Length: 248
Image 1 (tube, helix red, strand yellow):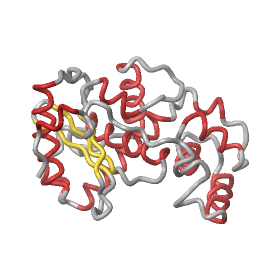
Image 2 (spheres, one colour; image 1 turned 90 degrees about the horizontal axis):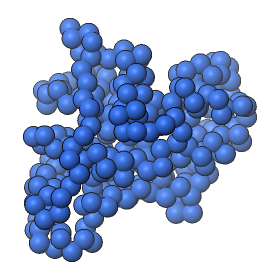
Image 3 (cartoon, rainbow, N blue to C red; image 1 turned 180 degrees about the horizontal axis):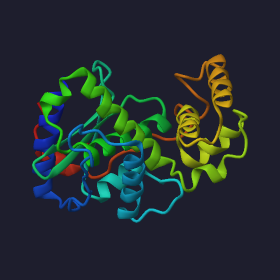
Image 4 (cartoon, one colour; image 1 turned 90 degrees about the vertical axis):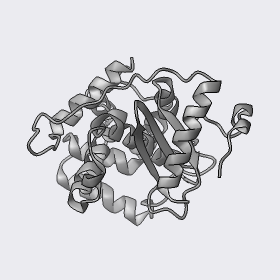
């Protein structure tokens, strides 16, 4: 099933379900780049936006307990579907005034799944104004994806708190951080590079260790016994209300 079909099904299901069970009202902010000519966010803009969204959601500076439930709380319709035959692992869109996020149900890593969710939240708040024609342009799409990744990183690992917990450049120290922040070690190492916690040599050494241990695809605490995959509640297929909705 294509992403377009997934999107149409989710939108129709979301609106139908909204008539049966009241969804929380949509309350997520949206932004536009200050440089309207280039339509590109600066790194500092994205950091500030991530901080603003945290503040808007009433979050402190610590780890976010559940990204999916947070989005649902603020009116985002979230669904997990099997997408093993798709080229994407998640996507999001606005249908009128209602935001939707589709996440892969066949994801092995709970930490990576959380990053996917935060990435899609980034698209909702950063790129609501982006037209479909822009997404068709490869170079433009790369910029948009990079911005969503930057948002996810800043949103999950705030620059005002995360650095205070990074005491060592030893790879083993990131296991405890992964338990607490529920973010992959690779994403945390990249965040350390972005906000200047470690120098280039330290980052290079960490990445070499990750590849040596064959962790790029599966880290410790991934899989069923590790960090759990966050599941949506408001649009759960097992809900009795959904039995009234036809999915073809």
